[in-house]
Amino acid sequence: MRVLAVSAHPDDLELLCAGTLAKFKSQGAEIFMSYLCNGDKGHFEIPSPELAKIREREAKNSAKILGAQILGGLFPDLDVYPDKERREKVVELIRIARPDLIITHSPDDYMCDHTITSRLVIDASFIATLPNYKTKQEAHTLISPIIFMDTLAGVDFIPTEYVDITDFIDVKEKMLSCHESQCKWLKEHDGIDYIEFMRKVASFRGLQCGVKYAEGFRNYSVWGRIKPKRLLP
Image (tube, rainbow, N blue to C red):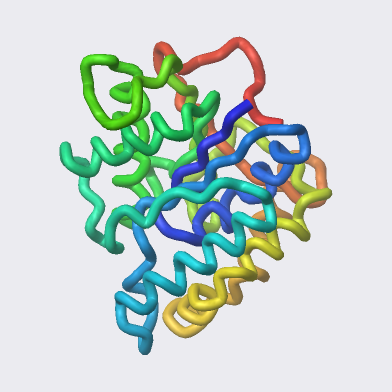
């Protein structure tokens, strides 16, 4: 099993699906963690070039905890658009990972980097299977099923799938804690305690499905993507 998780920013996966990725890993799956934007805008004091390097280092440290491959940082924050140039790069990303399953943002999340990332992944995952669409990598042989991870704070998101992450909540917290610069930014910019925020949402999703901690997801249910089996662990 090869799982590709694609987010907008370096810390989004840790916040929204790291428990599930850790559970996949425990079952022998190969995990690819990717973020399209380099995280260079989220700070009051650190300039963008320096911040991008810090965010890259933090993402790599997080991925090491999981033993995942890290890919990404393709564009500056707020510079991701559903155009041909960026779509081609996401096609290449998918052809490198060759996933059996893709996890990405909900198309109805709270900001443009998230929603456009979702659109790019949907489009590129189909295009990646077309041999006549040439990139450096060969075409993927599977139109990968896609699962949308939760929105921030679960707003306007009704899960169709839940994953019990009770045994993996500490791994999720450890991975999220690697993103120290983002933790500081969210506290100063939004008044959010990063770890408390994550645990509250995981606790709420757990309450909904009868476990201590869970992550919520929704299937991308269109023709060609629906499978007659559960895809999540």
